[in-house]
Image (cartoon, rainbow, N blue to C red; front, side, top):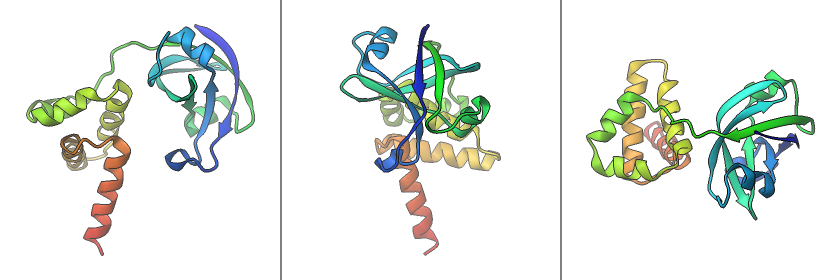
Length: 173
C-alpha cells in the first residue's frame, strides 16, 4: 500500500464531471500502483480511517489520475472540498462480481456480450450496480433490457442513460 496526502477538489465546469468531488493521484504514485498503465484501474485502501475497495482511478492525461469521492464517503470521513485526507491505497485486482441475471441475458445476445467484454471491469460494474439497485423486479428487468440494447449500440453507461432519458421525454411530449 502506498501512503500520501490529498486535497479534496471539486470540478466547477468539466462536462460530465461537473460538480464531482475528487482527489488527484499523481503520475508517480499511479505508476507505483500499476506500472506502465495509462487506463482506468481499480484500487482499495483507506481515506483517513474509512475503508474502500473497487474504486476506479481515472486517467486525466500526462500520467495523472483522479478518483471521485461520493457524498457517502465524504460524510463518513467528515471532510469537504479543500480538506486534506490521508490516503493509503493499493491495487484492487479482486474479480468484479456482476449481476447474474444480466450475465445470463448477455449470454443470449452474442453481439451485446462481445461489446460488454471490451469494457473495463469498472465500467461493467456501473451497469451491474444500476441493475442491482432497482427496487422492483420490473425495474430490474427494464434496466437489463436497456443494458442489452446499449451493448448492441456500443454505448457506454453515460450515453445509455442520456438515450433512455431522451426516450422517456419524447414519450411524454
